[in-house]
Length: 235
Image (cartoon, rainbow, N blue to C red; front, side, top):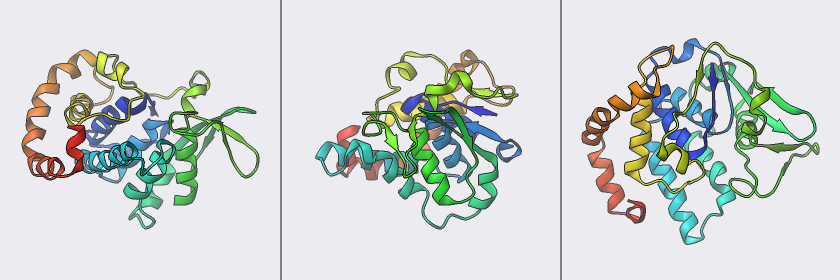
């Protein structure tokens, strides 16, 4: 299965979609950019609330100057993928991470441990001057860009997960400062996709409001805690 990127809005959409697949571990995945982050968190059973809480802290830290925008991905991975993760060995064989190199075009790697996983995730999400400072160069001299830059060379899979083109998904592709309401809206749009072969974006949009109403009740306690802290800035 091919899990595409589509930036920050695509991350939340894909997280909702993947968390709704009952047979998530029955597939092998080829992913790039934020699509890899969504896939990993879905495998780790990370809730949208937990992911948003980490994202909100990152936003607040960047606003206050306590964190540079180029450190966002590293902090996100350190917080949500700690050094000791249960069942990580069972997850990694399913992940084929696509990166773009300036010398050899597209490369596809399957990580064998957490260190390789984090290294590949940083490479595949490296957008110069957005999530990374300039062009990424590793210790061997290789230069890397976000996996999406080589998407025309990606392998053809039996199934692909594409973000529907809406005003929200388009406008907020490169916007890390999404508020809670918009994050849940994008997540619910992904949740509305019921099964493979994937439903059309039109049918998914029809179910989004209902899913948002159901999730709003579940997340009330967390929302109250966030609103009482600095995260209220982004509400």
